Image (cartoon, rainbow, N blue to C red):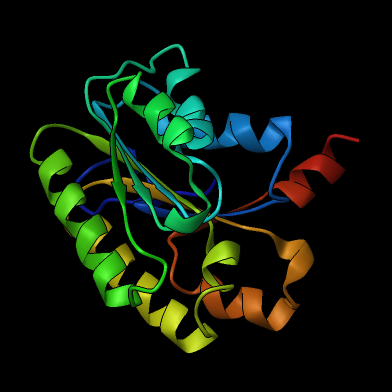
Length: 199
C-alpha cells in the first residue's frame, strides 16, 4: 500500500482513504479488510458501513482480529429490508450499535447518518472505517450520485483524522468506472495484482 509523506514529519503518513479492489468474498479480502480497519497498533473505534451484507458478518471482520475489542463499534446498515431481527440481535450481542437506514432514503440521509457516527467516534479515539461496498452502493444509485456521496465522505474522513477503506469489486465494473472512482482516494490496493505477484 502506498503512503503519502507528511510535510511536517519524516515518517510516512497512513493514507486516510484507501480503495480496495478485490472480489466481494475471500480469505485474503477479509484479512486485508481487518488489517486496514485496525492498523498496525489497533484502533480505538470501528465504523462499518454495509449495503448488502448482514451487520453480524461485517462485525466479524472487526471482532475476529486480535485487537478487535468492543470498546466502540458501530454498524450503519443501509439495506434494512433484507435484515431480520435475529441478525440485528447478533450485532447487539457484541455491544455494537447498529443504525439502520431505509433503502428508500437518499444518499444525503445515508451520509448524514455516517457523519454523525464518524464525528462521535473520532471524538473518542482513533477510528477505522470500512465501506462495504462501492459496488453495492452503485446498485442503489447512479454513478454521479455515488461519486458525489463518496467525495463528501472521503473529505469527512480526512477532516476527522480517521482512516477508511472502501471495497470495490473490479470484476463487475469496466475499467473506465474504476478509474473514475480511483481519483477520490489517497491509495489503491489491488488484490488482483497481489495475487498475481504471489503466484
